[in-house]
Amino acid sequence: MIGYENVLTTCPYCGTGCALHLEVMDNNLVGVLPAKNHVVSQGSLCIKGWNVHAFVNHPDRLKTPLIRKDGVLEEATWDEALKLVADKLAAIKAESGPDSVAFLTSAKCTNEENYLVQKLARAVIGTNNVDHCGRL
Amino acid sequence: MSEPKIIGFLCNWCSYRGADAAGMARMKYPPNVKIIRVPCSGRISPELVLRSLREGADGVMVLGCHIGDCHYATGNHRTAKRMPVLKKLLEYAGIDPERLHINWVSAAEGERFATVMKDFTEKISALPPFVETMR
Amino acid sequence: MTARVTALREVIEKVLPEVDGVLALRSGPGGIVAPYLFGKEHPEELAKLAIWPKEPVPEPLKVILRAHPDAKLAIVCRGCEERGIVELFKHAQLSLNNVTLIGLQCERSEAEFCRCAKPFTVHAKTFVGEPLEGVTDSLTERIAAMSQPEKLAFWKDEFEHCIKCYGCRTICPQCFCNVCALEDETWVETGRLPMPNPSMYHLVRAMHMTAKCVACRECEETCPADIPMAVHFRLMARDVKEMFKYEPGAVMEQKPPQLLVLEEGEYERTGLPH
Image 1 (cartoon, rainbow over the protein chains, first blue to last red):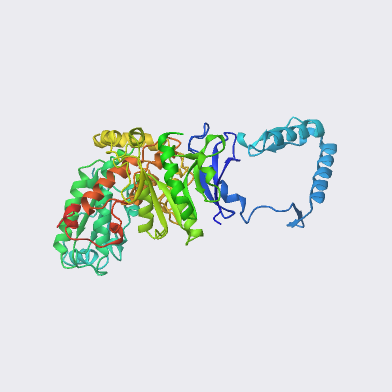
Image 2: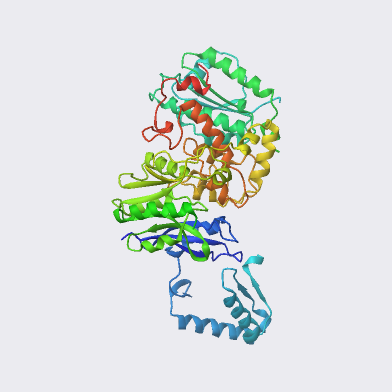
């Protein structure tokens, strides 16, 4: 059984939304093929788009949350990590006020995820300090 | 231009010894060529020539053994195949192909070596500096 | 479905039961075309067979054969794609023992789109369509006729639009090197745009395409800046043909000149000093 497939998807990197095909050989990601007759990308990609397949199974990808203990990053559970972040944000807000916190989000996130970040910033913490990586 | 900068890639077994022969016989030729010794002219990839130009050389020479006399039997065959194609590419890119000179000089040809140096230096001196043409 | 696609479908349906898969183009979700491996288990999928826009199919063939060296495959290929497959075979990137070539001849409009001199297959025993004569490449002729300063200005302007996406290199069916010279900082500076003049990336690439480019034009089609870099490759292909009597993908038994020593009479045609 030969498992060769080209899976049409959208590049996750920026807001342009270029379409591309992930080339899959027997369940392994082997490369990227552009989508020639797609209205946005028209068969072109930038260097990040050409290499989207590379990060999916990269050994450096995080698999669990990591918390720095005594200067060393150690694996932690989601509960531990979220509790730490919530406790610290609450403490900073209480001590230095809501505008001492800023939120930096990403063009790689979905619109829905970015909506949640600004909701967290404005409604939960009480600050307008929200920006994203595309402005850097 | 008054003082052209020329890079000369010379093969260890023929052309570099030819340069030595010219030197030992105290022959005069212009000092503008900076000589780089390589084991064989076949080692000279197009990338090396292009990088030399990119770094500001006004001319590049690739000198090897005569065809049939290569120390590695057929190393200079690679030179004879790659370098003419590179010359054509330079022409298509709008760069004067005369800035690249390929020749064969044997270890005994000291006088000929001096002539080749003199002729090429004169030719490059008549051209504008390479970096100016690229502005 | 046009008559041409129907005719191609009929040819594929005849071959399908005898092979493990037929590599052709399929119109996928949203009508986006991509290479697809049609199998005998689902012949009804051929309803989605497509032929335009063309895709660089030699690369998927190489990928499949690397994973399944004994697979019996058929592949639908145009003239340029067939040449690409033959060149990959000559460079030991795939084996043609179990591969059936199904030729697809290009129509006039397609040949003109690619400015193609040979829009037909020569090796495929079965093919669909009538082989047409080539078209003159007017863009290449126009650029070749420019004066030296005009050429310099033209290419400086073109290469300045390059965003170094490396698309031309990645899509090229002939590029298979595991370690690419263009990713070597010794030759191509990193972190620098626009390209310097002369553009090391483009000139080094042109040299590496010598006696390999099969004029499929995928590089130009994928370029986001519409740089006509194939013009360099085609001009040099003429010199390779004249000096070494070699055309990539034309003759199966002819070895590429970069793998051989000088043949009889070649030296005289290089223009080097005697």
